[in-house]
Structure formats: structure tokens, C-alpha cells
Length: 357
Image 1 (cartoon, rainbow, N blue to C red):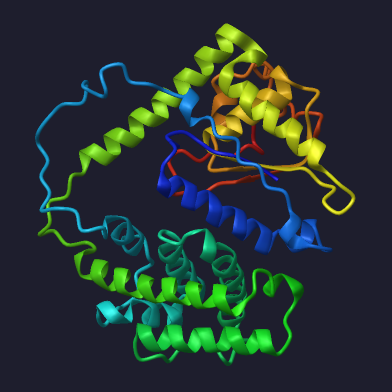
Image 2: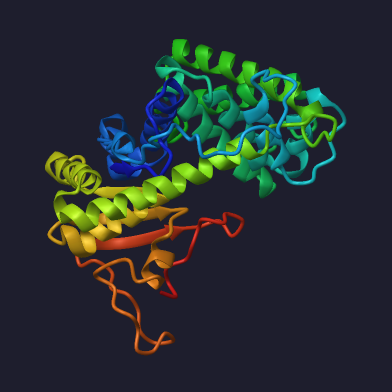
């Protein structure tokens, strides 16, 4: 698998943790399908191009100063943002967020718990946390369908919810579960993963009372500004490079090299090349496969939260000609792509469809 990241990605300890967790999750969830003989040997490449992206000559000095205040960061801003995005679920108290979700939205409870836990998990916990997450997600899906009597929907608080959830997962493993649910096993790794999950309960409890609070004046424009400039900057930098250097443009060449390497790494036990491209990564990969390096290909291309449809409509891909009849004509799918899956969220302002284009 080759994962091509989007804009605003820069090297940091947090970014490295995210890559480690994502690799582990891909091996735990997708590995059994792509590499049934040994899911742990699924090859995952992560071409990093952030160092070739936008650079701000005056260090963002163009941003207007002043006008924002904060009462001090306490490390819960990221968690609070997740809590604020939850569906409207009555929560009795800060220690009952997961217990409340478990009754009405089992999958949301699992998603929130593992997202928060993964935020600080290191390499030692990655495989076990991903494995347990896959098991918990499957259990939550069964619970939503009324097929999981061991789902802790009646837990009194978050501590009881986690304890009973871990018990249910342990019992499932002991009873003999499918191979993909045993990936990354080992008592030591699981103990570390459970510690991260317990830590996540505390972080959510600390963030929950502040979620949606109007008493706190948060620095709103700075994060929005930083995200916006990174997005615009990286997009403009990529297209400028392509105009000047074509297939030898630094960003394009680095991503192409990773796709080539992925093809070379295919083996009888890991035979398929899958490219996952997030956000701007989707535009880069489409540009490569349709125009810059059309000899490249993959068994499956998965674009996620991407703008390929929008960029095509704007006429910024050389391979895409304006349609004579928009209701009939479609932009070309690169010949080397076996299957293309485009994933979008209607609530994501930078996520677009492709089927109609």
C-alpha cells in the first residue's frame, strides 16, 4: 500500500505517531484481505512531500496580529474538538461520555475512544491498539444491529464501560476469533494499549465540560488561518512545480518513486498495489497516472476527502478536456487504475465527488 498525504503535513513527533498508528491499523484491518497468509507483512509506504511544499518567506508575517485571546492551553483542545463533533447525545456528566454513547451510537463510542488513545500512543502500543480497535469496531457494529449481548450498553460510567469492553474483547479472543482480530496480539502490547485507553477516558472527561462553552475565548482565527495558508500554499506550490518541471517536479517525482517502489515490492504473498491518497494527495496521484507518468498504475486507487473532481472542473489537469456535453461526457479514468473508490464526507468543505465528473 502507498499512502499519499495531503496539504499541511509537516514532520513532527505527532505526525510520526499518526503514521505509525495508521500503518498498524491498515495491517490489522486490510492486511488479512490483501495478505491472508501473513497480514503483518503487508508493505506500507508513506512518501513524505511536506518538506517540498509551501514555504512562507516572512514566516506568516502577513497574518493580521492581535484580536484573539486564550486562557492557556491545557492539551485538551484537540479532544474537545472531537467531543464537539459528536452527535447530539444526552450526557449526564464528564465521566459518562462513552457510557452515554454506548447506548445510542456504539460505533461513535469506539471511534472516539480509539482516536483519543491513538493521539499519544507510541510504536510499542500501535499494533495492539489497532488490533483491539478492529475487534471493538466489529463488536460495536454487531451491537448496533442488536447482535452483541456482551456490548456494555448499560455501563454506569466510562470506567465501567471500558472495563467491560476490554473483558468482552478478551473473551472473544479466548473463544477463537478470525485471524484479523488476533493480529498484533500479545499480553504485553495489550496491557500498554489498555493503559492508553484508560488515559483517553481522563482526557475526554477533562475536555467534556469545556466543549461548547461560551465562557472560554479560544484563539479561533489562528488555527483557521494556519490551515488555510497551508492548504493554499501547498496547492499553489505543487501546480507551479508541475508547470516548471513536469514529471520531474519535486513533489510529483517523490510520489511517483513511491508508487514505483510499491510495484517492485509486490510478491506472491502481497500481490496487489493499493494507493490511498488523501486530500491534495488525490490530485497529485491523478495527475501522475493520467498525464505525468501514465505508465504507472495500481490495482486500486482510493481517494479520500479529495478535490480531484473540482480540479478537473477547473481545467487544471492536462489530461482532462472540457466536456462538449456535461451530462454525458466524463473525464478519463487513468488506464493503469484497476478500480477507483472515492470517499467523501458531505460535511467536509474540501471533499468532492468524482462520478458526475
